[in-house]
Length: 72
Image (cartoon, rainbow, N blue to C red; front, side):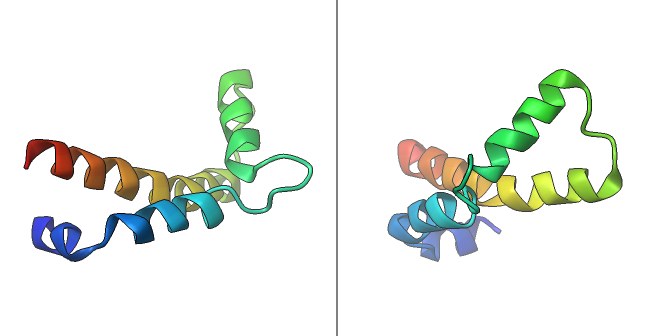
């Protein structure tokens, strides 16, 4: 897994987080809506949890890539 992360360019991780992580953009980024649902305690349906995981994944990869760069 660490080797795959090494091969991934940082620009790809940033683009994925900016597009896939935030889409759809209107009326507000979807990930932001899901975070608000978590705070309110209304993120209970399995489809909403799955949707949150899909939109959060690019941000997790981006953070992992940044940590890897910081360690190197």
